[in-house]
Length: 241
Length: 311
Image (cartoon, rainbow over all chains, first blue to last red; front, side, top):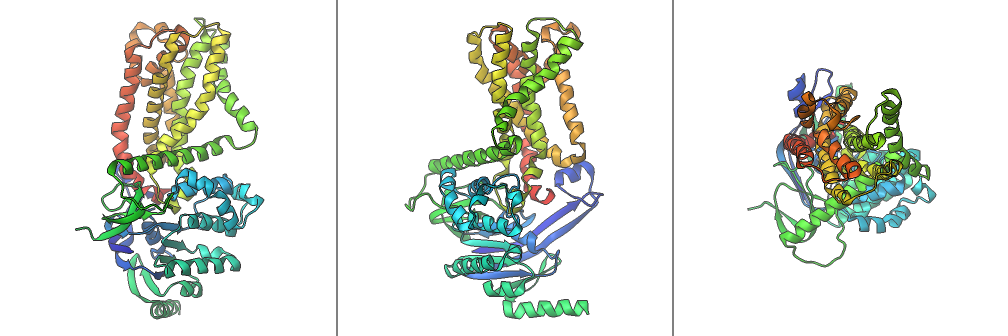
């Protein structure tokens, strides 16, 4: 279960319009402040697939990062019950100079596995990602699809109850997209939660029954996917036309 | 009454420790949880048991140790690469660093004294542990950017990870110290038993400096070279090229205030003079480390919540 109460995420900028920490802002002054998310309140229950839709810069990625624990909200609070796996970028948190095997070990431990368990799981991750000798090559030689496959294989090893996806599925090949859809369905059917953001709405429609439409960091609409998504597209066309 | 219940907690760690969010890894029984993230974990066994606070603390400690180990291992991969040459590099790096100063002191400055090369090594090696930890810490967020942007983890372990990485590099320096003792015919004495506490103080100073270095690395990112130059100045504002007893009386007491001075002299006592380090030689660097911890750790804990926004 995910519950968010009045979440706000603030970004401070210096005079070069680079994001700075509060400490640096105090030390060197700041030019402006923006809120990536403002007063966002929602809850997602067990067995629910939810799509985050909205234009670029509307706060989809920021919200997913809050749910993943990468960003801590500056206002409000988040309660999350369940093991979270996140694929928030195509590189899936992989470090380019490390091999697939070394990355799998590192990410496995960061994701919550004891080191011994992460070592034991390496062959399983190798098999699940479909890599052979590539598993021992540096990740900088991988294609984007390969990185996403490896990232997902590691995430799977932690047996997630909550899966967070940020446009990564849009970089995947058709075979792996089907696999990802299948796994997302399995998580939802088992009572877990999938939250996916992206612009590939047909893909999102296969996973999600609900959509949260974000605009300027706030929720504009929250409801059934088949209701909210057409209204969002209408709005885009109206603004474009 | 807590509003949220999670399914049991086997081990936990905090990504930030703020009032709004924290992280917890679950196991299998209903426990009340407020303001918490539950992060991925696959229980080692399926046994369902309620954990005592002690056991939970031990789990948390084991988890931190695992995390520290994999972070350090990945750092070492960046640093030394892979293949047989990494061992050659690991062995030769300290030799090259000491060699530069040795050439300066023996040939250019024509400095005489007791076992000049060993004396110099006793200063360069502890300094390198601190210096390289600071240099590593200043770039560690950038190096770990993909992880910081994708997953929550205990970011307070990053400074210790930087220091441990350099400690592995330091291990080869120990061979250099032994080699230098052989070159100058200095026999080891019981004083060598003081090496572990001296090393511990050296490591504590490096970790404490790493907290500040990570912050300076993001606050003053365009001034990284300047910060490193400042640290190098501290090397020359300590009895590095010559022992403390060869410095002038007028500056000797002032030099002791530099935490590196005590460290350099303690290494010389252990490896060169064969005597127990004086209390101040350990106490002053320790005080320096405590001051750095007191100043930077609270700021680091507050700032690390924002690291993912600025990398």
